[in-house]
Image 1 (cartoon, helix red, strand yellow):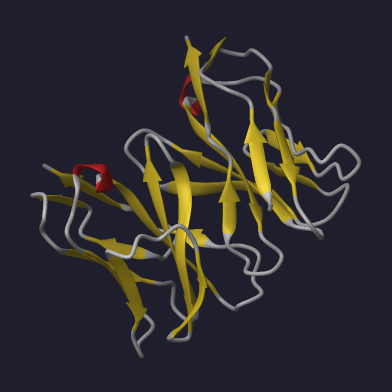
Image 2 (spheres, rainbow over the protein chains, first blue to last red; image 1 turned 90 degrees about the horizontal axis):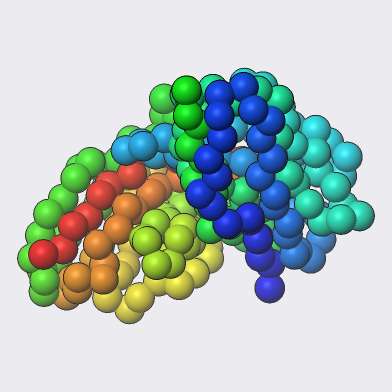
Length: 112
Length: 113
């Protein structure tokens, strides 16, 4: 079945450091891919998405490119801020039911 | 604000009890999804409704049930609650069955004591 694998956390970075959170997927067909963010005590917010191969999603300085050849959708940000501290979830939209399949989440902590 | 409203935000109840979680989707959205977020299982899909009909089922326990009403709001009923049911329950909605993007509510945090 479809699945999403994310790098284990927590990830601790200093402010202005470069961020990469790895995400790979297994899926039949061509799913849409998403990154969601969950700030402490809050719900899930869509960070960015990509619906087909080679699409790049971007938002708030975060970027991820849909790589079909490596089945990856890694999240990157050039310079993180303390306010980016949160849990990040990679997800795919199942092409049959359109339900989301989530990775386990990666906790990011950014230190001032 | 995603436009999806979940009530209540927090719920504390005892083992063996029954609770109902409510979700109002975004205006016009026909599809509603329920997810459970727990420490040991992560974020898991429970069930999907579309325009009042059940469309897909995930890892939903038999003690749990859901429905979607004619006004498109949805309720998730959890009965014979156990300590392990303590989790954050999310509702999400999307406009159509084939919509790839869903919008999530803030969740209901259920604590079973």
